Structures are given as C-alpha cells and as structure tokens.
Length: 437
Image 1 (tube, rainbow, N blue to C red):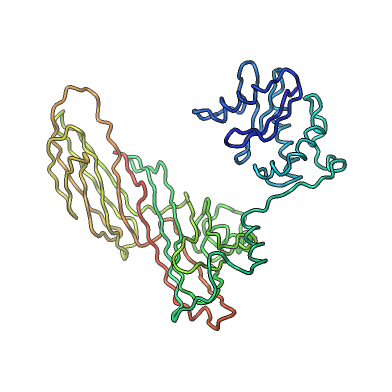
Image 2 (cartoon, rainbow, N blue to C red):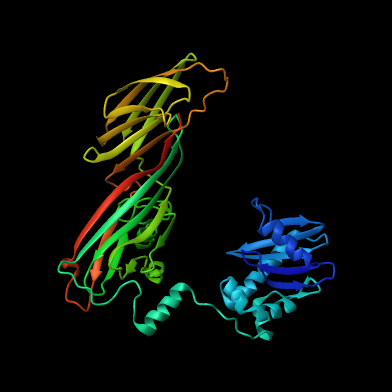
C-alpha cells in the first residue's frame, strides 16, 4: 500500500526516512522537497502527483509528514494512517517538533517497524504498542517550563532585578486600539476588526505581584456560569457589556497557568515600560466615525463630490487629529472646495483632497463639497474610484475593552494596594479605515 514514509522539517531536510517497497527510490525524497516544500506557489492540495508517484502529506507546526506510493490506494485510508502516526508519536513524546523528533528518532524507527509491514498498516493503537515498546520518549521542555525550572533553581526572575525602590509607587496603563474598517458606499460594513494592545509603565518597589482584570467574555462567563444557556450573550451577570476577544498573546511575565485555570492575568511586572498583552476582536465594534460619500460625474470634464462625516460616540468626548483623504482622478486640473469645519486642500502629488479637522465632538455632523475640473483624455477607461481613507484618535476603546480591576500585592515591603497610584487611559486610533465611494 505505502511505498515509503518521510518526515521533513520546514527547510526540507529529511529527519526520518523509511522505504518499504523497492519501487520507491531516493529521488522521491528530493521530488517532494522541490515540488511541495520549496514550491513558489502555495500548495493547496494535500495530494501531489509527481512522475506517476503520489505524495500524501500533512503538516504539523513546521514538520511535514509524507506517505509515498506508486499504487492506486485509498486516499482517505492513507490520511487516517498518517493522523494515527501523529497520535502515536504524541502519546510517546508529546508535542511534534523538530527537536522532539531528533531526540526520539531511534524510538520512531522502532515504532514504524511495528506499525507498518511491507507498506501495510498493522497495529496503530498506542495502548497496545506501549505493551511491547516500553521505551520512554524524551520530551523537550517548553519555554515556560524552562523558565519555571530556572526560577525554581536560581530564585531569579529574568525580567526584573531585586532591590528596586521608589518614593512613590505608580502604575500607568494605556489601552491602545487600532480600528480597521472597509465599508461599502451604502454604509454596509464589509470587514471590521480591532487590533489592540495594553502598554504598562511600572514604577513599583520590591517584587510586587499584580492582578489585572478585564471585561473579557471568557472571564465574565466563567463567573456567571449556569445563569444562561446562551453562550453568545454579550452582557455579563451584572448586565455590564463584555468584549469578545478572538485571540490574545501575553508578555513572558504573565503566569499563563493561572489565566487558563482562574482566568485572571497575574504577573510580576518588569520595571519601566513594557507591552503586557496584544489582542484582536471582530465583534460588536463601536465605529467612531462614518463617512458618507456622494460622487456625481457631470460630463467628461467635471465631477462633483460631497462627503458627510458623522461622529458616533458620546457628546462629552472629543475626537482629535482627524484627517479624511478623498482620492481624485489622475486627470484633475483644478479643485474648488467648501468645508463647514476644519481645513481642506487639494494635493496634486497625492492625487487627493486632504481634509483636516483638529477636534470634533461626539454625535456631530459636518460636510465637505468639492467641484473637480478634469482634463479631456483619449482613454475610454473608467476611473476605478479608490476608497476614501481616514485617520483619527478618540479617547475610548472602540472594542468595548474595559479594565475591571488592577491590584498590587507586595508581601515583603510594607505597602498595600491602596498606596499605589494607578492611571488608566484608553486611546482608539484608525488603522486601515476605508469607505468605498
């Protein structure tokens, strides 16, 4: 059934090579490396045919596992077998990685001899295999485990030195969010997501432990579990809104084990400024501004553009550094502008009208009107109308991200959580914020 089995790393180097039939030669190894791993175009199919030889492959992290055959075999059975091999390896030495495969290559060859006989699968049950292959796999420690071992042995924390002292203990927390949007001319949101980060400045004495709480859906649901069967509810037990975080990553100081079990972000902060976490969210985004474009072509030498800008946040808040860039055709000869707020200017070098507003309060509306004169051209190609882009800064988090609590514990030095001065600031900025016109 299977002529050979090869395991490659991301560079295409062969880590494991086992040939079961004479019709598979060494050139098959190189053929897969050149045509699949080093292919310029993205490989979409898990089955590749090269010179009447079929290669069935799966990828785990940066490891490629390929089964090779010249027979007309059942593809589903081959993939089922490859997944079983992965399962058996994981049961012996954990994570599938290049280091683990190199450390356990004798064990892997022993397993392959038991699992396959002349290319036919025999026994793939890890429980049965462990009764006669009793050798223990060598597991490489993860970065977190290595750090834990180091800190247990040396008692040191790599990112913070001991003996730090401040007259005044302070914590500054900045929640920075970048809103990315693509909207249709009719006002329909085509795509929107927020990329956020939490930046902290720590000026604390000793070796304090901080606990940080957010209105994340996972955290709030774990506290209000059993009250509602609706997992898509966007409010917590107390009725407060929550943010649905799609993915997040933390600074190395965060104790991930506590986050997984207790859903609390617990850490000993580095001294000074550092990035505590990054996150991404796609649900229930509060879009700070709405751009409503109206473009009308008057013959071949004239175009009228009207852009309405609406702010969609609380009236007590102010948006700043607002800039709207309205593209113009390449054959623009002149532009006449009227804007109710701010300043607008036509920039020929950028082929765009740049409209700048210093400040704008929430729930307000303003507009710009432009009359564009065009030069006559011989080309019949229609202008593609690039989207209107926008830059801004607002004093809130568009995703709804909120800091619920920030507590500081320092058992060695006698100062409590109440002695620490804490500052929290929310800043929302534009990422790629575009409206088609």
